[in-house]
Image (cartoon, rainbow, N blue to C red):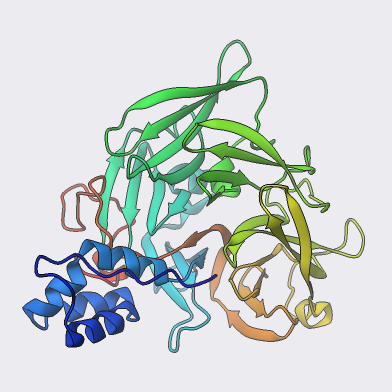
Length: 408
């Protein structure tokens, strides 16, 4: 994706002098943890590294990294499992997998039905995660360790999307429930005010055919003020779109791809090179054990809906099969702007570039490994909806101090 234009920070005294201009450029290129440490050097650096416009500019430069979840098997106690949500950063020098959040619990806690009920990631937007645990719903910035509570929408409704509303300068949650008349009613909740209101009534689900967990399994992608959901097997020819300003749904033609009927779909939407892209993994024939290639489509003309398949990434199936202990390959999706493909093999992650060359082979002593459909762009930008820090009482259990990288 093209780098965002440089934005000068707001100051009371006018433009930056030469030294501060150089420091501004250096700070922009540092990771969030280093930016926070630089604030302690002197007042000038504190002012530069805390300026709101600088923080926005710094967030624009951060890469969108795929989130991977798993449970560590060996934590010193056979009765205890450690849940981890990590980002995969292929450009990191020392640690490709970096912990975002996590905590330990008794192994019985990790039964599949409990896992869905007790901890779920519903959305990721500009560095903020939308998470639920038990009967609570939270906004959380794992980089700054700030969080805020929301009404428990996930108890009686299904969350369809989580996004930034540019006009109100606020996070919003789109959710739905089926009424007694059989119609599906869509609602929007404003994170700052907690206000909830009806925005649409539909005869059937417009954005997904899956019975539950839409945003957990297939989160929408935000582009041009619109949310876009990947096509599903019951409607492979269409991409559902929600205009976040007009608050209206419409359908966009999708490229001619095969969409399987599995709960974890073989298609994924993402933003690449500033446009909407679609990753589609497929085998030579229907029913093959895992994908043999990944096609990468680009929406070259958003207005006229012109799609083009720009890359066909052939996966080295024989090489992959050497690591398979079970019957199939669970998933293979594009996870970076460079076109890297991540393959999930239960307890191992394989990464290939868009030429099919091996980039990384990550064996993990874990279980329930899953390539999440969400991406994380780290951010130091504060927001009123996340007023609580990691030292606040009643903080979520998934925010232990020792797992997080950046201080409050």
